[in-house]
Amino acid sequence: MTTAPREADAITAPVRDAMIRALELARRGPRHGVNPQVGCVLLSPEGDVLAEGWHEGAGTPHAEVAALRALVRPELARGATAVVSLEPCNHHGRTGPCSVALIEAGVSRVVYAVPDPGVRSGGGGERMREAGLDVQQGLLAHEAAETIRPWLTAMRLGRPFVTVKWASSLDGRAAAADGSSRWITGAQARADVHRRRADADAILVGTGTLLADDPELTARGDDGLLPHQPAPVVVGRRAVPATARVHAHPLPLRTFDGLDLHAMLRELFDEEVRSVLVEGGPTLASAFLAAGLADELLVYLAPTLIGGPMTAVGDLGVESIGEQRRLVFTDLRRLGDDVLLVARPDASAPTKE
Image (cartoon, rainbow, N blue to C red; front, top):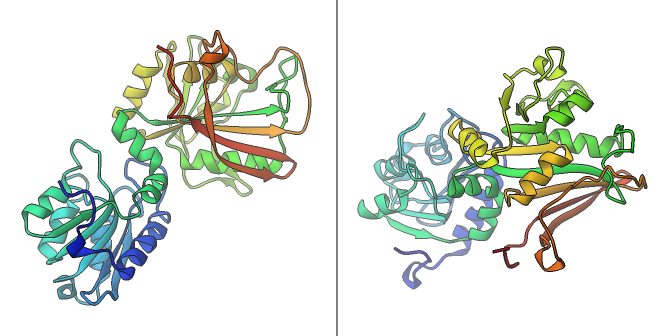
């Protein structure tokens, strides 16, 4: 397979600029849902922008089709170059295959950033090559992969992308000795959490956190509920009280008995959940970390000291310093008086045998 631009079809400045624009368009789409964020720009043979589009959510036209529909005249697609942030899909879902749409429109060249790893949706590049189109892969691949990292991870692993979040004092305590934890962090940090909830397909807590804090598990802003809500999921063997506030959530409550995390994630994936936000408490967070199932960590640090036994993370199975779970920081920002640290597992670190 061709995985990089050929010398005869070198990437020109207009094509590179179009990919940068395609990535900007992709980010307009929702981060949640079964479909990835994708942008598409159509260029004339001279390199002029003819039309552009992006995927606006499940059930709406995919980016390539949106761009084709945005053309002033459909015949302008003939001989055009389609620059797409993700390999055009190759399957019938709520909409038809984008690879076929591009072929039938008369597009002569397609440049995309990253391949689609989906078992059913992948293969669009090869289908277009077989139809005689010039197809190239790999332009700004790293940037494109970072844009849709949660979706790519989910499709490659067959389970949702897992983000583990906690808020703690500077000395790593998630609560005081009596169990009280509201509020360790300030208003800006809590608002950031709610925005991230709205980007997730599901939010997970353990029964311990549910019984102690009685959370709503909703995504809220200053004016109430945000437009998208993560599905509430509670994990653990204790029953959810009939009076729990989570029952008022706009989406049905999903419960899992026990901590078979791999089975739970596979089941959620089959239900079209592609990203989950694990919010508590220490037992559940530690279980995901110990199992190597945390793809990203969000740690909100408050400038305060609490001390005592209520640590944000418990036993991870680390018995010596050589077994420590190394991380890579990907972001650090101030949120009012607090600090948000974003980290992911260090892929270069040796794993425990």
